[in-house]
Length: 204
Image (cartoon, rainbow, N blue to C red; front, side, top):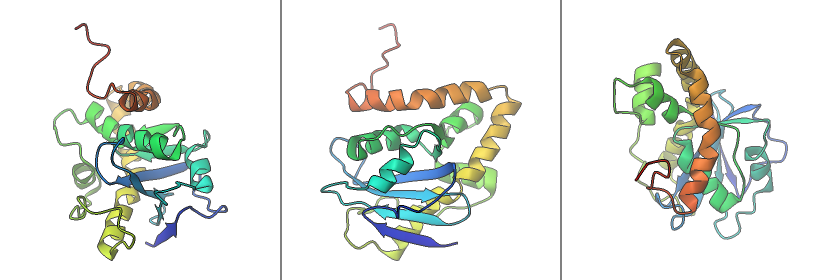
């Protein structure tokens, strides 16, 4: 496994294929207040690319082109948040997408534990170290532990997608899952526009 740290943007010739694992690190969980700091990428080959963004300009044309490419599927865990911060700070519509957390909630109905660590432990027999989850991602110099943690969040998303597709198909929920994935960019847009906690489909 290798980790490559890029400052500001990815190289123009970086090819991660047509299915890309993606994650983000921010200063917090409020996209209007807490800036996007990192974007992590992997093609599923055991290697990771981490982009440390310029939080003043977000001038990253190559990264924006890759994430906005409608021919490339982006795999996230909790895509709703990641799509929202990418739209807020990179000004792109990040689709099409696959969300392993959404898939987990649709098919692992026997548990309420749908975090990435729990999914990896059960389905892949992989234990993730989450010690750096609460960390200062806006630091100009990231520690080795931070870089390794950020990379670990994209290493296993391709394998999780395969597992979840099998489980969703077995339970007859695969088409429903993909319909949910198509809606996620709209759900993220609702979050950004003020409907984060209100169910607009509810009767009251």
